Length: 422
Image (tube, rainbow, N blue to C red):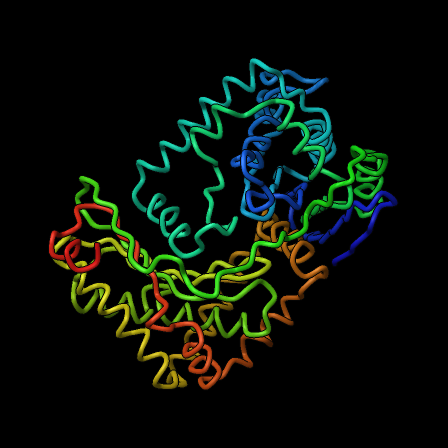
């Protein structure tokens, strides 16, 4: 059973009761991520997420850690380009204590000077960890190649330089600007009582007024989504065992009418072991161990990215095969058998992902954040069933433009490739 309540101060509370379970997932989502940062604020959204766990007016960092473990569940947070979320997943009987702890972190974190300086170094190490992981780092490099100066093209973590130059006062100003009642969603899924939960939501969030500011927050700026990628080939030599590749195409924004067609197209292209890329590149030709495609959708645009890792001698062969399979999707309609299999795959993945309270809580929040309403599972299933072979072919022709695709490579890049594309 779903319910939405807007508190008097603008905080949105979205709830789904699942009485057959014994757990509850509760998330507090702020409609702010790295895309809302301006020059000099790179990494602020993610850094605030870190600082929320470093002590409040009522609890030390050690007490917070002890209480999290004592709840017997999970408590964590994450930052994306467009949102920051803090969540707990606990047994239903621990709901009250978990809500109290999460609200304390959200409202009363101290942002102590010593903690802030120490956390700068921790985030710099996190940035280095990403740079040491080729699969993570190639996606970061590729986003810059595809989007250029658009905010989505910047790394969520910021840079070592932005961390070192971070000022506490500026960080708190950024927090006060974006962490506001009308910018906040409380999402809860699991076994709970609606009246009790709403009483708690009013207690912890209903009296919150936020800081006075004249600056709008949670709104997409004037940065236009690029019609054409600023870079089409980007080579990054590095002494690794494999060359890691990202090949990028156009995508769709969140909420686009053709989004379910795009999900189907990406799944057929490179989503799973039965996908065309996996079968052609790995199974038939042995060119790569890992290859997949994925869609990334944002408020004002999106991308479709193919990732692969291969030996240096096979880089061009992998790229050629990706281009070949993209052309096939544009030229020939998908067979009914392949389409039906993909629909079953998509629906199965969706339902399995929503069997638990955490998956349901995430869906509740994202529906509210991006659609402003609850999207039912029945509605999604019907939309998937309506996708036709011709729709996939037509969308492929729009998105899989061979003149527009972007190649980013990281690793021991062959000299002939550097001479040809470098």
